[in-house]
Length: 30
Image 1 (cartoon, rainbow, N blue to C red):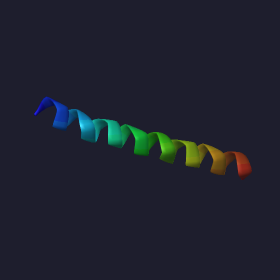
Image 2: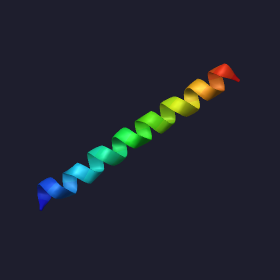
Image 3: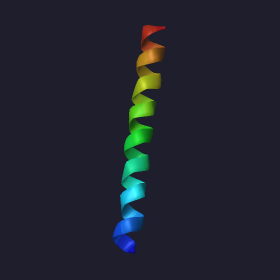
């Protein structure tokens, strides 16, 4: 159960990191 709970967290963190990076790049380009 703990492993399953940890998997989504890592996935969410990864998605958030990618989204944050995209926003940062967009701001730099703008």
